[in-house]
Image (cartoon, rainbow, N blue to C red; front, side):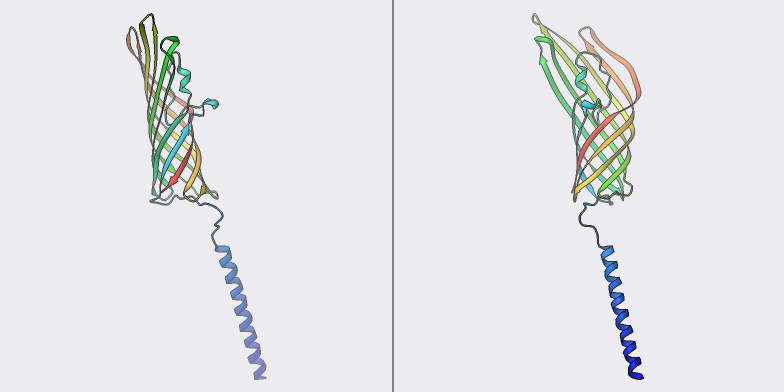
Length: 236
């Protein structure tokens, strides 16, 4: 009788031990991290270089971070062009980052002594903003934010006929502020590609120079949708 009780207790202990080990094993498997996806890096202290390409002219969108300009002399169609930019961002808190971007473009077309003359375009923009990243969706980190941008554009048309050169120039400067929405998709660890769209309020000041002198137009304020970009973020 005593032998039977001892055997039963041993069998029960052995079953319980096997059962516990089995469940521990299952729990360990459930908690094992998914190593097949690159995970967004939005922890405090994380930082990344930013490289942007924007304008997307074929969609009628203005360059980023430059603003919507109102140049109204021949050649202003060049404004719908591609803007190259670079900068960085730094997560000073978990999921909250400060960032800065500088963008520019320079173009020259035509010749002074042919047809409509030589048209030169210079555009630049410097923006400072903040991003708020909610919970990621797999390897995608969406975000919302606010940004302010100081931007400038100069378009200069020079014509030379019969040894006489005439010049028409328009210079515009703007201060823009508004909300933005975007995403970072981490394709591999530490490297993300993404896109962004901004709705903004802009105040624009214009100065026109013609052969007869200079004139300043009254400041123009407007709301617009028209700042879009794609970017690459490289963490370091």
